Length: 330
Ligand SMILES: *[C@@H]1O[C@H](CO)[C@@H](O)[C@H](O)[C@H]1NC(C)=O
Ligand SMILES: *[C@@H]1O[C@H](CO)[C@@H](O)[C@H](O)[C@H]1NC(C)=O
Ligand SMILES: [Cu+2]
Image (cartoon, rainbow, N blue to C red):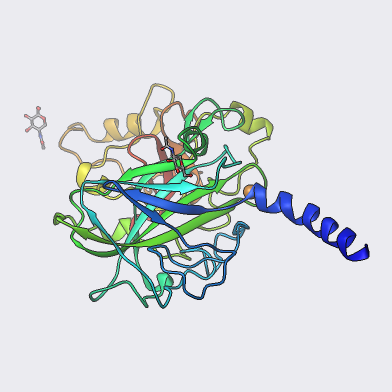
């Protein structure tokens, strides 16, 4: 009798936690279905394209040593690798129904040295972001997010392997970040893929990051209280991590942030001191005595705040033209 009661108590305390979290349980690509790693089964004999992971619990530290591919993210003795054509769609499926609708969706690739990713530590790789979805509409507080779209889409996320990515062996890292509580919750899982028929556009240095390393706990898109008064009015959100793969090539001559009549100070003075503004060098925001701190927002659609960064940071476009942040220019 005691044993039954104790078991019931255990079950009722453990179950809600498990149901409230989770991760990527399977994948599909090119009509093929790939079961993922089963974190609550014995590792012995498991053979999947997914890297091993051990718990439905989120990572809650942006610098956690296992933030690349979740704990522990190693390849298994019977590790598989999926062959995936460049330009094809790959879908990751989370447990049904994913519970967290507030936060961004992100997808990364990292190329492995040599002829396989098996045995390669995820934390030694350089990652680039191929897909992201942050605040899609509305406010931080009650708007539509990438995470909500993932839930609406059968608790799954489909991304396309860019046709420009060089062929080779990669880890693909699907991540959902939940912002409904602080600190932010990270749910990353990785799978091994071999990309075939790829292109020749290597990611730039600025697009490559390490995990841990790509995020800090102070990132404006992570250290965020979605219930604050500010969040209830805020319609912009800065997705964490590096600029998207290909964004440097797409905008090799980066434009300054949308300057409007409400932010005339630097552009007006630079026009005045350079009679030929078209041939004069672009005003460097780091030359102005700015007020916006590193990683502070300094521009973007609908943004009306200060636009000049403190030295030595420059106001840099993120995510296409949706937001600008004060960042190190190298
Ligand atoms: C929804 O996802 C489940 C896996 O979680 C999958 O078995 C099912 O086929 C998916 N449904 C559709 C319509 O894609
Ligand atoms: C300045 O602009 C004028 C008119 O467009 C042009 O004729 C002149 O060559 C320019 N001077 C310089 C230094 O670019
Ligand atoms: Cu959860």
